[in-house]
Length: 346
Image (cartoon, rainbow, N blue to C red; front, top):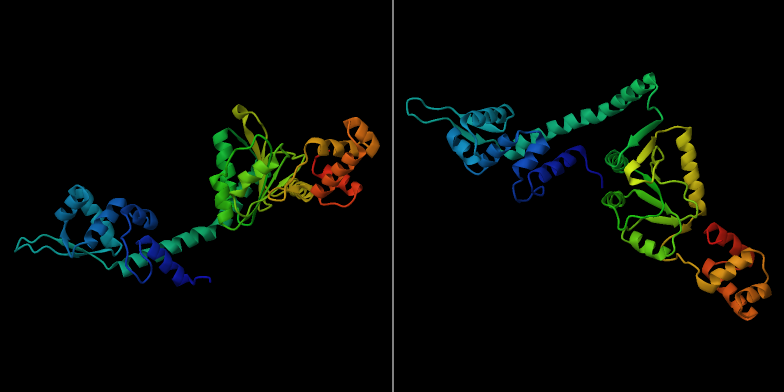
């Protein structure tokens, strides 16, 4: 169920102060309040300190928060200007100093959360205009409109992860050996956000081992293709990163933005994907004599010739042929040849 505007604010507020809406809980740290509300960290420390006592003097707060007098006064002034603290004036005749008290969080902090929410909304609304200005500047200069060249592991990695983080609908990844063992944190994050994640790899000697690696990533779709054309990613069919070099010391990449070139890349991936073989529990391979029989069949040899070639009987050859048909889930030798070629076995 979608949250309404005020409900969403209430949930953010509850998370900020470290409790569920309507219930008690631990108070948030000064770091979380400072970061969440754009409040100076020292001011957050003072406010949290005031929450634990009815009133306090400036000197009390300076000691409690480890601040000098000037910093304490400056941060108290910030809190007062934002409606988070109240000041009881000093009484000169009695020698009683100024005392400070915290404003009630349910109202004071909630107002700050709403103000922060409005600011973030304004920034979010301005993003399309900022993007248009960026594109216009690059269009006028004739640089970087369609492609962007990125060099060095750090820069390529940063661009790669940024594009993955920004994906909202689908990520397509093309990869080949050598593979990095184990799932990457960013890839786990993609799947946890409900984004479709497709991976296409070249065949390896033991694809089931590769399938076991991918099994840890629940929801990932993986397929094998004999001719993966390049290493790279395509996000939301709107942007792509293509790795240019295989040597670690010379790593570089090309970033492609919306263009006929990117459209062609997407079509290439879709075409390869349609011919690729699913990798997973149903992924199978042929080995030993069955694989030899398949290759000799593809070369046009009859059963008797294959038997002589392998120094075995025709009956054994036909049994191996049946193993091939079963492994490929087909009923005829012709279809077996087509499917084996599609899988890159011959």
